[in-house]
Length: 214
Figure 1 (cartoon, rainbow, N blue to C red):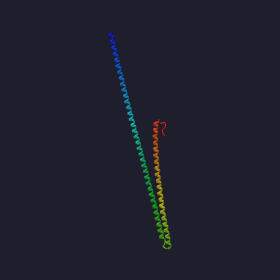
Figure 2 (figure 1 turned 90 degrees about the vertical axis):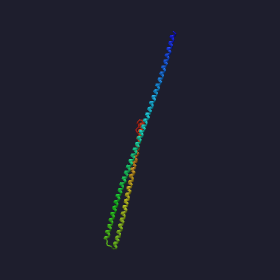
Figure 3 (figure 1 turned 180 degrees about the horizontal axis):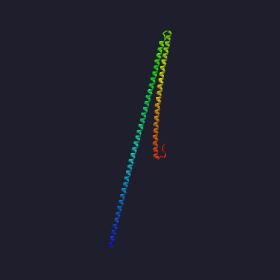
Figure 4 (figure 1 turned 30 degrees about the horizontal axis):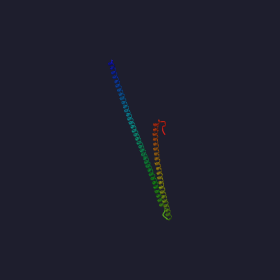
């Protein structure tokens, strides 16, 4: 009987020790699994953060490239507009200079023709008059009249040339000023439209497109 009791006690002790060993190993396995899961979660979070950072960097780079390209395009457009304006102004100046030269040539030709006609008329009158005391007085009077007419024609032609040059210069200055004002207005309107578009897009992306522009 004592032997049987001892066997029962020994068997109970062995079973309890086995159960304790198995429970401790299960706890260790659970802890290891939890640690592995935590490590995997941390790795996934780190990978997601890295991917987000890469995406943000790529987006920022793309935005910067787009801004740089847009600035370059705007600068190129402004340069092209300035070149076109300069070409237009040069063409206008050349046309006006040609017109001035043509007008001056016409006035000079008219004055020369008038002077030649006056001198020829004076010679005809002088040769047709018989030399005498009275005829010398007439020749002197005609000479004086011819000289006065010549001086008047020269003065009138000079005044006409000066007036034409002044008018053309004023018109040229007005054209240049108008062109510059138009270009400035176009640039201001274009800049305002670009800012309005940017504000509209920013406001739309931030507040869900409730208001398109402001």
